[in-house]
Length: 342
Ligand SMILES: Nc1ncnc2c1ncn2[C@@H]1O[C@H](COP(=O)(O)OP(=O)(O)OP(=O)(O)O)[C@@H](O)[C@H]1O
Image (cartoon, rainbow, N blue to C red; front, side):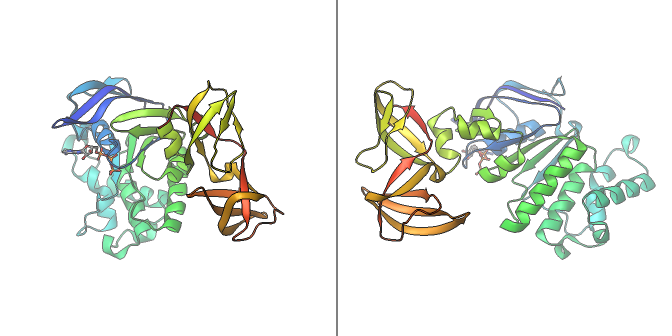
């Protein structure tokens, strides 16, 4: 199912939670909506689900205009972080719920529903848990049940709102990989809301970065990392340090910071650079001081250095002789520079 949002605006009072959002999701694609708190991710997901109205703009799903189409008729499966399972219902009944509540004319018979539930329990790999209550499950198991419940109606589109937020880091990583595999196998178009960039970058075919009710860039993860469209995206993705610089003769200068010049193709003037830890190589000697260091594996070190009153994350190549308290300087191996001070 394709999803096309055109100039969607949603206001709450004077503030626009969505401010002219354009988004085109392809058939079978997994798209992540990534952005800071309050940037409009959940509102956009709710508009697509039909749970939230709009003040302007148009939404089409599979080419069909959704104006006036109620949520229950959109054929969308939804999993919210806080969309709790029904505590008084067993797992199997939770999964069957979306089918049980259908009007008689479109409701499968009891045997067909039982078959579907059994198949879904197999799909999410928890067939042995059918007769348990939600309170008797782990967080990861509950998430699988929530997903099975969303899939029970054979949705054309799956919307996931921070679905892994309640899980601890290790379980979270496993569950999200498993969800991505399942989504690919089923070929179901999916939109995932997250504020966790690692999750977005790992799971999504394309990531829509949101800032104050707008999509500021919509691109493949690698393109976002290498070619951020704005300083906001450059700062939000990839844990980069934001540093003022001065551009002169095709080179960015960082003084008073002990960072070697970085070639750029920008006109002379002030600039703002975004340098990731892996892009700043520490070498012995200079006005920076190594404060902390941590082995990265493969002989490389992650360093925290202090220079000109600023703390920076950097790396040291295998074999570099640097210890805590040593003097060093930094050589950029890459980085993104935007014209103008920010
Ligand atoms: N029902 C509502 N009434 C008033 N304001 C709302 C309502 N829903 C959302 N907003 C506001 O709209 C903006 C966008 O909210 P939204 O929940 O979409 O952001 P988000 O990016 O999902 O944030 P988070 O990551 O914190 O969940 C916020 O400023 C929020 O306060």
